Amino acid sequence: MRKEKHHKGWNEIKTNDSWAIFKIMGEFVNGFEKMSEIGPCVSIFGSARVRPGQPYYDLAVKVAQKVAEAGYGIITGGGPGIMEAGNKGANLAGGTSVGLNIDLPFEQHDNPFIDGDKSLDFDYFFVRKVMFVKYSQGFVVMPGGFGTLDELFEAITLIQTHKIHTFPIILVGTEFWAGLIDWIKDVMLKAGNISAKDLDLIQIVDTEDEVVNIIDAFYRKRDLSPNF
Image 1 (cartoon, rainbow, N blue to C red):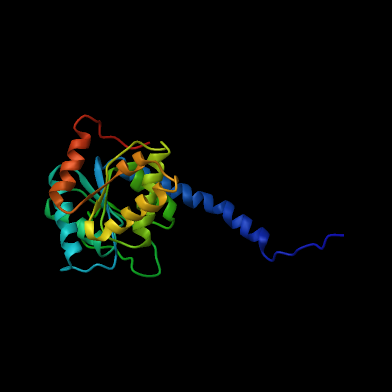
Image 2 (cartoon, rainbow, N blue to C red; image 1 turned 60 degrees about the vertical axis):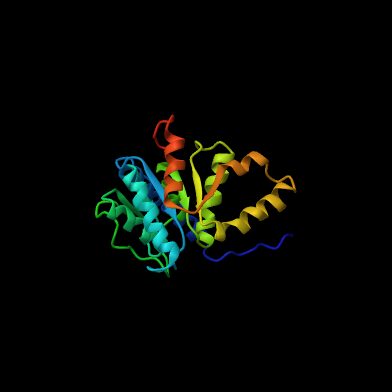
């Protein structure tokens, strides 16, 4: 006879999981309601560990300011580092400055450059990621860590599989990103794990003017609307 396995507290876990659905729904509803009122935005991603005065922080400020001056709001993860720089640039341009904050045990705290009525708090990464993808007209990806790569490859995957509309994905910082792109070409592409046209989903630049030119050129003949 098969020995019965005992899982202490398993039923309690299942009950808690069921109730969590309502909290998840609440985050989606709140996010959709607030984000749908904001208008066209560009999301800026990058490391939370970069500090003011460092080159990529200062460049992120310039990028965000230029994008905001072109008429787009700026969405960031709401925290320090590149996120703060993005909101600061939007603020300097007098543009819309959105922060999608996540509750983390380290690194994350609201930066002071988010518009007071456009700071949203999330407990769930996956809900927050939906907001980035749904309401962004483009992703500007500055140097960062695992979280930055997560957002980058999530967007590429969703576009590649036609789950969302195509939008510009712009990597800023050739020195930082060139090694990754070389690996994708030399290993993934040669192995047949991606197709050559997938590489067209990504562009690498080094200046704020290049970022804005790519976004403006992309939307010259396209409507600005949520992505799904």
